[in-house]
Image 1 (tube, rainbow, N blue to C red):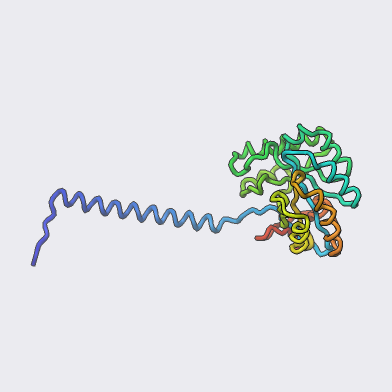
Image 2 (tube, helix red, strand yellow; image 1 turned 30 degrees about the horizontal axis):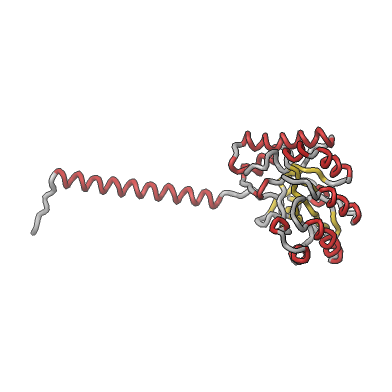
Amino acid sequence: MKIITLTRRGLLILFGCVLLGVLTLTILTTTAARMVAVSTEERDIPIYCVERDDKKVAISFDAAWGNEQTEDLLSILEEKDVKATFFLVGDWVEKYPDSVMSIAEHGHDVENHSDTHAYMTQLTTDEQLSEIKSCNEKIKDLTGETPTLFRPPYGDYDNKVVKSVKDCGMYCIQWDIDSLDWKDPSPAQMVQRITSNLTSGSIILMHNGAKNTPEALPQIIDAVRAEGYEFVPISEIILEGDYTTDHEGRMHTTEQ
């Protein structure tokens, strides 16, 4: 029988290997536990659309930079007798106060799109609250009304962002139909994209500075109405009382 005798150096190497193995196992176990915790954490999802059976939909416009089209869009909406929702960045509000007042005077929702169009998930909670509250104050100073809806810039959110919005007493709003007007599709392409994805309670995303939006808007309104839908502001499409959002972001009352 062969007997293996370990030298001091060999014992140290063996001990090091055992210690490395234990550390590796500990790290893997901890990582796995964290992954399970993350995967089982309940996501707080914003409102992308609303569970309704009355064929009401909402059209919304984000305004962050230019202002060349705002009055044209307001004229089209007035001519078509449509009330929409405008999400405004605080910097935009400061730069174009007359347009903010015009949007409000035309009876549209004037809502919050952050103060500086920042990526909200990259901010601390205090910074998130500052972005929301600063924009609210600027809009209220002009219109006399405090926004109740918030749309995160870039659609960028996590649980912390949604909580900050709720802590401000507001609804966090996304969209379930993106017109993709910011990619400059043709009006016909926008009409097709929107009508093919319509459902009761849909929220449509558009922008006040996209190239073909003014030309497409009348066609979109006519096509959506031809499908039997009615346009209302987002403030009128969301449900009253306590609510939940499902995995698709569809808003339901807790009574359902």
